[in-house]
Image 1: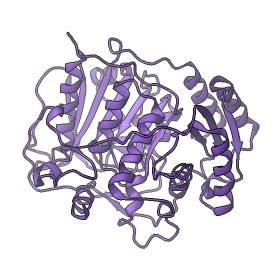
Image 2: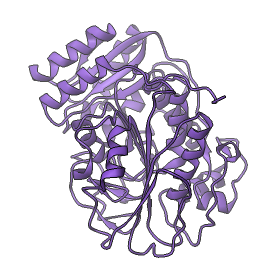
Image 3: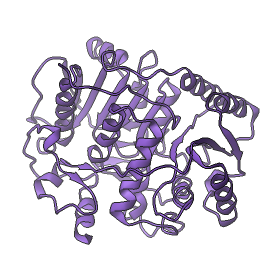
Image 4: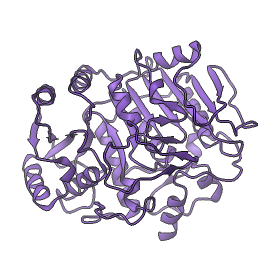
Length: 423
């Protein structure tokens, strides 16, 4: 078991020597859990595996909102959401310190009494940080005796009262998207001639959606070192080659821009840093679009404005890490309703795809999120007392990094209606 954990950790957000470019059927990709055999080197090199989600029944049927907002401009929209979901609002002084013993004990007692199914966190932007998330896992795994999350979580952040109000309004008015109406858009980044994992994942997604009778327009961004990299074949494909790796895209040609604007679901694979995902700058996020659901497999796509961990100066892909707004919160500010990403170093497709797959089965935001974190807890062996990192030793080698996946959105919201195979 220990060897499998080391192998999976080694596959995290790394480049690799020459990767054989193939587009397998998703049904052939191994599903990995604690008891899985050791994957092959090629599977790991291409991140061509899928984390097996872990089901676990929630404690009850109720909805709880945890918040440390005090301004009426935030509390009023939360009141609307609470009315919409018949939810209980619990206020705490500082969600950034949710893991502190007194706060943790008090919140645990309240949640056990209420018996939640859904727990939405509405933090102030300065409270949204790594130990807030890890402290939430400490709280939600200790509502009963087993080591798994006992409620379906979701996070509702916003950079301003106006943006927060808009997010809540979109949430309340949201209607699950049907299979026949869905318009996805895939984005991948090719960093070099030898690193084509992200392009492969776009190809896999195109195959998956084709099974359901859905076309997937795809944009691929080739960085300067990708002079002779592979390309996808088919229709609705656009390739962009950038001359300078550090000049991120803020605008697109009319045809891909039109397809992107029309998409309700955007799925991105590639490297990222604060303010950039897959070579797309936050300035390139559409403002007049249908992009309601966004999944990013990039590192730092949900980076907090304040961090509990040492600053990283560089990121996988050779990018310099600057202090910029997160891609995820910027996307929410520009009209998205649900965003999947990571605070630091993401494993990409192996953890992103099962979330998408679960939503395609009709699961809620929070149910998919809970099953992902429970799967990671199971495979990594985390338990009470081992979640929060008060004094990280190094910048990168923090075991809890793998628990820092984030889903922004109402945990009870159902993004997609259940899919069926096309006839």
